[in-house]
Length: 137
Image 1 (spheres, one colour):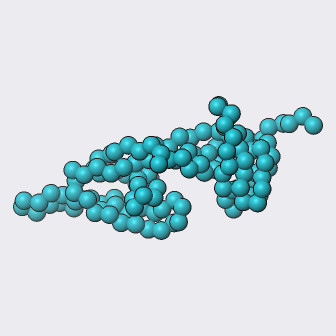
Image 2 (cartoon, one colour; image 1 turned 180 degrees about the horizontal axis):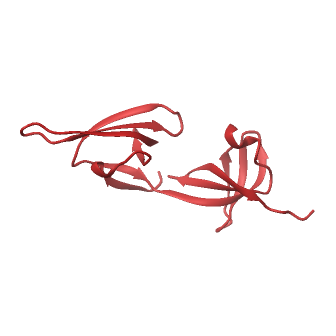
Image 3 (cartoon, one colour; image 1 turned 90 degrees about the vertical axis):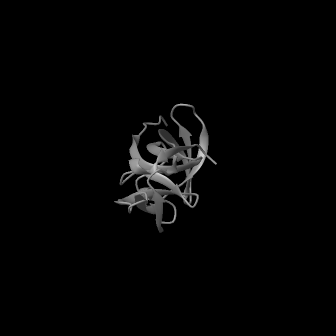
């Protein structure tokens, strides 16, 4: 399992990333409700899983903490494409690795393309295209 940071529930906002049921999720809504005479306020978090697209909801007291994934945003060059996977090389440390190739980028990526990828808890995902490198023939 990759790196996570605890974060207070009352600091979470729409667009942040959290771990719910062990999956990385994007927060789509945060609502707070006031507590009663002796109760504490509660936070209701709605989030969508990044892998499966499934909606999840959790309700937590305001003093709680939740795990948030540490996301590294890095650049890589595509070395080869085989089916729905790409082999890429990190632009800084020259590490080579495989990543899934989503339908969103399939038509715009070829060998030599520079991409922006996110490393989230050891899982690498292409998030954007930076450009192409001129490779001498």
